[in-house]
Length: 329
Ligand code: BT5
Image 1 (cartoon, rainbow, N blue to C red):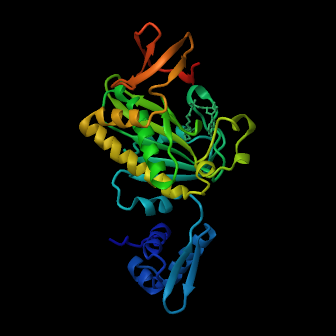
Image 2 (cartoon, rainbow, N blue to C red):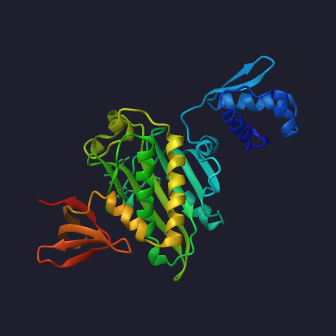
Image 3 (cartoon, rainbow, N blue to C red):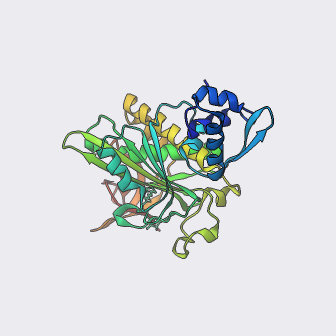
């Protein structure tokens, strides 16, 4: 179904749907109940936003080029009618999308609200580590979910997000990301994505889960600071091709919607299967480095709670709740 034109964003969507065919200015004006001049003003505003719109005499407007941005209209163009995403809130530059998402969740934002920024100036990882988020190069996004589950199940959403992002990358780029427990995606052993899951909860019920994901998409090696040179990578560096960030953001959201629904309907088993299948950790000898000790052994699987199981030298299984994993000799 064609979207109804009522403002600049819906006009853009309509021009996108027209797939390069001209759309008559008079028709757009009639549909929106405004003058042709008002439609022309929206077109001018779109051009100021970086779109190229050609005016074809007697025929109408044609959208010729879209900017490389993560605006709601550009993401929605790829989402089509997927019901998972309720609202997309887009920022040019923020310190971090996480506190914004927390505030939105608290003030009643519905399940499926997305906060996305072109740039973060103080992006963060776990334990207050910094997350480098260069302008226009990646997807820096926080997703608010409000599932009706007890708080102890919330960490499973990190695993659901990891599976979803893996799938999305594979759909759009000719590269394969693998999951490093608990929250990294790697390509060729280097980190391409980090996931940070945070929680707002009562003692027995989740109020909101905020999934923060940083995906390195179009960086070139010189875009990373020196300290990340050996440990980080981008999809573009691995595939040799730039990728449409809005298309990837939409694919991530579509997959996340699909796998969260699957999880809520069928439980953790299908997620566990997919996670283990895409894991870079299972089957390897690892050191699980924790604050008080390091456990060494072979990673053998994850439990229903997302706990990593390691078989140690003496054959016993240790459950690891939170640690940094590094390869062991
Ligand atoms: C993470 O933490 O990997 C979670 C990152 C989550 C980022 C998203 S972006 C949207 C939302 N808003 C935020 O402010 N955060 C979330 P952790 O496992 O603690 O890893 C952090 C470590 O990854 C750092 O100490 C660096 O070594 C490395 N790192 C930082 N920036 C990176 C990047 N762009 N690519 C690869 N590695 C990076």
